[in-house]
Amino acid sequence: MKNLYLLVILFSLISFNNTVFAQEVQEEEEHETKFKQQPGLAKAASKVFFSEKPWSVSGFGEISMVNRNDVPLGMEDDIELSYNNLYRFSTFFGYRFTDKIIWNSEVLVEYLMDPNGNSHFEFILEAFMDFSIHKSFNVRTGLYPLSLGYINNNDEPVMFGSVNRSDVERIIIPSTWMGMGVSFYGIMSPSFNYTLGFAQGLDGSAFRSGTFVRSGREPRFDGNAFTTFSVNPQINYVGLKDWTFSGSAYIGQAGDNQEITDSNNNVRRAESVVQIYSAYARYVQKNWEFIALATTGYMSNTADIYQMTAQANGGVGEVMAKQNIGYLVEGSFDLLSLFNNRNFLRKKNFMIDPHEVKVPFFVRYEYIDTHKNYNEKLLAESNANMVHFNSDIITVGVNFKPREEIAFKVDYQFRNNRATGPYAAKEDNLLELGIGFIF
Image 1 (cartoon, rainbow, N blue to C red):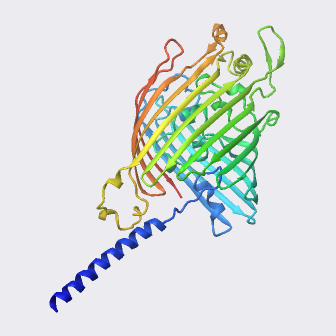
Image 2 (cartoon, rainbow, N blue to C red):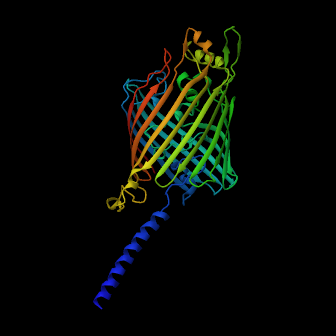
Image 3 (cartoon, rainbow, N blue to C red):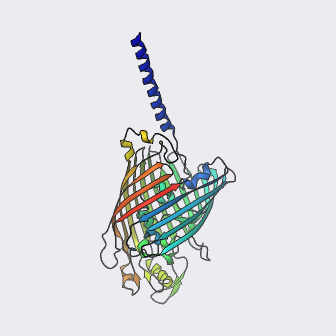
């Protein structure tokens, strides 16, 4: 009888442990992210679309430091690409008038400082409105993120591993890129969704040789604001479990209808068209993430852009790329998944959520050539400026994510520019530290 009691007690303990374990597994399986995404928007920016209340307040913040010793050649006019210290805070205010009409706005404040002691403070207001007509057809109008590449629609700091976005998606695809216009989006089938946008064109007079169209992407409200236009299609395939395949494009005017005086002293309207194409494949599993992305940009009539930039910059003209290319491959693995016994992370507190805590280690290789093809005749001009990146960049880093909303980051970049000669930009290895959060 005593043995029977012992067997009953032992069986009960085993059953209890199995039940507790099963409940923990079930809780982890049933645990859902607190943040959902609306097409074309990152996590915090999407909050109003899923809020139980008709209004929402959300946002993100970043504090980043880079051990940069000097400002890279060609980056002097864009401190965001050459900073040592960055402080950024963004707040989204959304209001749902009805389930079909949703207002969303952003107030962004940022402060940056570069190695030369130059600082930059910026205060940006952005707003757009969505009309949810049908799952297959919705409208977004105002100042909104263009659907191009991956980062431009996933630009909040907890959504990518490195402290900074990749050079491929900061230079050829100049993330974050907001467009003033109207966009249509929807779900065509369980496997396919799409976006088709029409927005302002680019300000070609602001282009800089080493950063392609990045300096000309800012929205404009002057008399020429809507004299040039662009089209921006994207299609995504999500029919394969854990995978996303995406293709997108941007085709837009960059002449801005400005008058230029060409080499023959003829006064005429500048004309140029920019084309950017991008595709990526992304795989996301519980402990693994993988992304491969490629993009290429084209610019027609770079001689006109040279004249436009010379007129805007005291006679110094920018030699722009007729074609550039960039691609990257990145893999990430959660190191915490290697430890079966994680009792020290089982209890939820103000910092750690045991369902969400991760320590992803990642490696990324990227290649960028800002001047795969260009008009060499323009270099014969006395005041020509050209900055050439033909760079291999390997980034190795790790994050500590105690919960979905927070990421502590560190990475190291090995950077090498294959370009040589007087137009080659200097590259240095970089150590980057950062903290990012969303709410």
